[in-house]
Image (tube, rainbow, N blue to C red; front, top):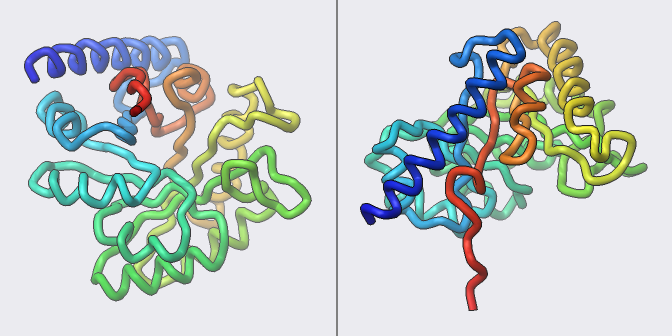
Amino acid sequence: MTDRRTELAANLAKVEERITAACVAAGREREEVTLIVVTKTYPASDVRILSELGVRHVAENRDQDAAPKAEACADLPLSWHFVGQLQTNKVRSVVGYADVVQSVDRSRLVTALSKEAVRAGREVGCLIQVAFDADASGRGERGGIGPDGIEELADLVARADGLRLDGLMTVAPLSGEYAGREQAAFGRLMDLSTDLRRAHPAATMVSAGMSADLEQAVAAGATHVRVGTAVLGVRPRLG
């Protein structure tokens, strides 16, 4: 455990250096960017170490991994973010621990989240996931809706009981006009955020960038970066 703590502390320090350098280069204050550590596939013991090292935001993308981990770490001062594609049959479980759902991308999901948030007596933050590779159906390869769908879905979240519209999220697309152009994609997300805040001034959160492209996200103006591999390492495949 001591070795793992040392490893995580060193990795976390390197990521902090990267974020700080990116902020300096962009003329931003370090406090403007929140680090979310994506702990998917890693055990609750790692989450506990990260909390001891000062991490306050963690993210998961699969409910079957997240739910028991969140329960095991319920005593820690953490905010839990759900970042994966979310099926409606998992919403009740996710609402039980997630403070923010970053992958809201359809009206049916908003309805389900609202119902379960009210039932649980919780307020759940929601980010609209924007897909820059959306096809004719308006959906992206890894979830999300095209930019044209943001306004309608955001209004729906804002009106829903038990939900709070926090802002926008994106994943750098693998296809389409922004493929391989991460900073351009993140810059477009910032423009969309500006548009959103005209109608919803409190929706200031912009979640973009991961281990490989956090610098581009910070340069574009992201308020939150989601980093997994650079902090936790590459987990060996089981079996």
